[in-house]
Image (tube, rainbow, N blue to C red; front, side):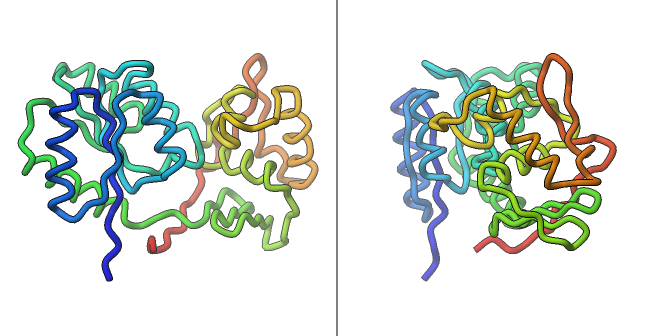
Length: 237
């Protein structure tokens, strides 16, 4: 039995939303719908769809804001995004792709074009990252386990999520608030001042590799950009 790919469509124009849902459903996709950026973001975090169709101009949160939040959250950052917009200016296209979108379609578009773009993006993202390596450090994403030079490192779930967020984007400086949002989600009870405690514990566990986690004065923390993480792909179930 083939498992249907799940697509979340975040679109405030109901006629477009209905047409997209009808055509995707007729082509074997499972479809969820949201009419504003905030509810779309919440659905994405809850459902973890295989792909998101994201309109640029949305109430509550616009498409750029939704895309930025999805791509800064370790839980949702791997979900491919196709942005939809009536605006075709180069700056808008660059802006959407710069936020991490995988493709950009200008309205009006044919349903045949949309289906083709979806198929291409899904094929391209079929291989999922199961682990990340940077220097002697390896993170097993599915197993929530960490090794350093083949020696197991004991981390709490919170520490693992924070480390994963940093290692996945080396060189990017995260504020404490961004780390909480990206690694732990909006419902986390961890507060800003506790992030320092967790980072200190992670560094202690890393021992000689503690310098991988750098303090960025006036901002927060980042993973050393001197080494790039190497994704170890595994076939997505």
